Every structure is written in structure tokens, then in C-alpha cells.
Amino acid sequence: MLTIWLNYMVKKRKDDTTEGKILAAARKVFTTKGMAGARMQDIADEAGINKAMLHYYFKDKEKLFEVVFMEGAGEFFPRINKLFESDASLEEMITRFVEEYLDAMQRSPYLPWFIMNELNRDADTFLEKIWAAPNRPNPAKFLALIEKEIKKGNIKRISPLHLLLNLLSMTIFPFIAKPMITRNLHLDEMQFRYVIEQRKTEIPKFIMDSIRK
Amino acid sequence: MLTIWLNYMVKKRKDDTTEGKILAAARKVFTTKGMAGARMQDIADEAGINKAMLHYYFKDKEKLFEVVFMEGAGEFFPRINKLFESDASLEEMITRFVEEYLDAMQRSPYLPWFIMNELNRDADTFLEKIWAAPNRPNPAKFLALIEKEIKKGNIKRISPLHLLLNLLSMTIFPFIAKPMITRNLHLDEMQFRYVIEQRKTEIPKFIMDSIRK
DNA sequence: GTCTATAATTTGATAGAC
DNA sequence: GTCTATCAAATTATAGAC
Image (cartoon, rainbow over all chains, first blue to last red):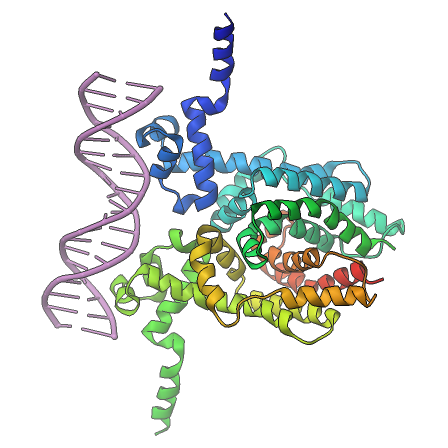
């Protein structure tokens, strides 16, 4: 009885089903090599099965890629929205956004690069679908809040647009430039993680120091 | 006599030779689609010639890619070095770096993405070669200058590493995220150029406001 | 559902005429 | 140097046995 229950729990774990193994493998290969560079054979090997299974479960390469991409975009974009749609103060908003975003990206470091990458290749195809999703990125509220804070005299006069760009840049860029950064600054994996950890406080401090009156 | 001279001048223009046409086409295709996504046929079409010519001039795809990549990296990295090795003051250094970098990228907007992209794919292969080049990126001097300015009490205590990361992020990231940015903020090509133009003053101001005592 | 074997397609590269 | 036609290799996709 216990074994049945254990079996059930284990079987339920996504990564133990064939479909789950394929998805995990596809995620890994697509996010590191991109759509064009990924090979179906690599994905099959990574999943420990054969190519035919990939087609059995996901029809063709494009379909499999789309699942992985949309899943990735779904993780990448809503975190931006959390920032935009929260009711917190500006400082709190910024702090929490940086923290949560860096945490999420520590778990999937290749995600920012992967999303940006495929967006550069095929912006219209994918942005169309992301756009249609319920939690599409909407910076309007964040921009409006900054305007309000300026008018209330709480922060310096600054372009809301550029503040937003600065925030996103400082948070996301290090993951995209990771190979360049680790190499040029002689950082190993652990040290890079530590630098990212530091940025959770460094970025909000840097921003607030700049806009505080 | 005049026509001979004119002919000579015209023939000398790189883009009018077959080799020049190929290089220009390869630049365009490789920087937008990447090594894996680029097709030799696309390059040939873009150049207005046939595939055989590509191999006649550049042996194979990999060799052609390497020429384009190293040429691009040669343009991308030395501008970082100009910052690192100048004798200017910190503020002047930052201002000039941002200005020159954004100018260069306005001319080749896909360059940052292209370099980062291939570095993500094949970091060791290319960083090895870039590293061997005489003008390899060397942030040490910039980091040292920041330390000095802190000790002299000219600026706030701040982590030099994070300041460097912030500077690079804010300058380079918008070009990598261009499709996302233009789409989400409803910017057309002209407006994007204008925003970049604004950043030449916005970024240095943002940084100096943050680190000034 | 899973496998092996094979077909079909795409794409890089070359041969050979001009 | 340039072109057309063709080959060779890599890669996606499917057929069919179990």
C-alpha cells in the first residue's frame, strides 16, 4: 500500500514521465543552443531516449520549441509584471523586483539570453503570442507611479522611461553577458553567483541614491 | 584619364568588389541570424551572387563567420578599452564611453547581440582569440580609478565592480532588448534612435547622481 | 509507448564549363 | 572570376516491428 502510494507520487513527478524528460531535455538544449543550433538528437540523448519519441510526443521540432519558448517567456515576463502591477512604494517595488528577478534567473540563468535571442530572430511570431497572453508586460503603471512620485516631490525629476530601462538593464544584462563577465573578471561559477547575490542590494541602492532628492 | 582615375577610386571601394559584397552580406546575415541560423544561400542572395563564390573567396562557412565575428569583436571591445585606458577623470571617462559606445552601436545595432550571442554559444573558442588580440578588454585600470576616487573622498563608497556592471548594462542592454523594448513601449525606429540619443546624457547623469557625495 | 531502420529534406561544399 | 549542376553530409521526420 505504501509502495503503491510512493509509486503514484513518483510517477506524478513530471520529470519521470517520458514527456517530462523530453521537456526538461529540450529546455536545456534549446536554451543553451537556440532553435537553430539545437539538434533533435541532442535532445533525445539528453533525455535518454530516441528521436522518434520526440516526434511521437511533440509532432515536430518547431512545436517542441514553441512549448519550451512559451513556457520560458511565461516565467520571464510575469515577473516584470509583478513590478508593474503591485501597490507597493517605488523603493519597495524596485527592491522586490530586483530580488525576485535575480532569484528566478539564478535558477534559470540562460532564460534571459534565450528569450532575447529568439525575440531578436523572430520577434513578430513570438511577441504576438506573448502579447495575447493574459499577463502581458505592461509598463504603464510603473511609469505612471514614477511621474506621481516626481510631482509629489519625493524624487528628482527624471525620465520614467530611462529609469525603467536602467532598472531592467542592470538586472537582466549580467545574465546575458555572463560569459564575457566571468572571463574578463576571472570569476568562477560560485563567485558569479555571489556577485548576483550582492546585486540584490547594490542595484536598489544605486538607483535610490540617484533619484533621491 | 579622369574616367580611369574615377574608375580606380570606385573599384577601390570595398563594397564594390565581390569580396566586399560578400562580407557586407555575411555581416548582415550572420549578425541577424547567428552562425547556426545563417544560410549560405541567404548570404549569396543578399550579395547578389551565387553560393560557389562564397567558397571561392572564403573557403567555408566557418572561415567566413570567423572573419565577420572577429571584425565585429574588434569593433565591440576596443571601445570598452578606450574607457579603461584613458587618462580622463571618472566623469569624463564615463560620459565619453557612453557617447562613443552608443554612437557606434547606432551604426551597427545588432553587434552587441551578435557578439554576446556567439559568446554564449562558444565562449572558449572566441574569447581565446579575442584575448590574444593586442587590445583585449582590461577593466583593471577602470576599477583602480574608482578605488582611487573613493579614497580621495571624491565619490561615495561603492563597489567598483558593480559600478562597472551598471555602466555596461545600461549602455549595451537596450540594443540587445530592442525588439522587446520597441514593442512594449510602442516605439518606432526613429523613436528608438531618439531614446538612445537621450541616453548619452541620461546614463552619465544617472550614474553621477548616484555616486556623487 | 518505445524502438530500429530508413526515407525525405535541407544545406554546405565541389566539379567543371565558360 | 563567375556560373550551373551536382554531390555529400547532416538533420528532421516517418514507417513499421515489437
